[in-house]
Image (cartoon, rainbow, N blue to C red):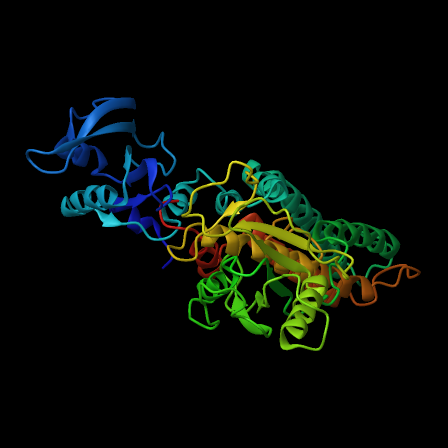
Length: 460
């Protein structure tokens, strides 16, 4: 559901931090009744903006310590009266706090609704709002920097510059249409128009990356789980798929053949519709020192080694977190290796790699982060650039803008004194300006806004 200005009359709440057990959790309440909710449930209630040490009343006789950050409209993130409550991060306690807030007449926020309210109140542009979602989803330094480029407005400034240039050229071409019967009046010479359009096309192509317009290198990039026997690969394979596909057992060597299943990661990255980002997830045998004879075990090892050498994405599974073993040498020119410390519910080894992603397939810990890491690697494998250099919606829009520019260039005879087909050139330029207008905010169709905020998590 796309939030609208009418929704701002509601008071909304959500958990704004992670769902896992932690020392603190942040619960956000925003809307016209946020402060009256605080007066009913906090002791003492904050009476002015700022941070306040208080207690949250779970019942008439039971309360828990709480830090409440009060912000008054419009000087808050969403431009609403806002309370942000930092409470102990026990999942059961968090749910009790939220239940008390709901009982007071507050509804649950929809995904991205806080940021949508900020956008609708004019505190963020649409691109900056997308930057918030991209920053939350970032799993690498490159992604973070690209998200900050959106959030800072730098990307929006560039897009508006291109839009203004296109509108200026469109105005000159349309002015020429009015003077087609006067040969001495040429608002812009074809050679100049062509040169300026080519310059715009080159700039947009550079933004899209060197692989813009090229076919994907691999429609469904392959992602293989690698590790020793009993490293938790098959259990993780099933958890990522959301169903039991591989047979799992505590005894090593259960998996002998390659098990290959599609994994749809659409929606993991902002702006990726269903079916647009699918990887082939492969579960091979665990790596060991099997004999090189013709036995079934030896064949399983050859299949596993070949898969790990040839797949562009490898999830290296090691429950110890040490990653002492060596992976088969990559046959591909580029390979992304995601180090996953499986079975993270077990005690941590002192020699473990602290940079590895700790995951637990049994309780789902960090599976979301692992999916995002796979999605990032898959997007890079198919498009040749960081997924957040230009978000999928931006890539699609900029591609359509560039194609419209190329269509207009094809209609311009640089050797002519004036444009031969000014009406057709104007139509192509109008298509380009309208396309990029969906990025700059000049054109904000409901479906565009809906797609932007549908990718957010609840509480943002």
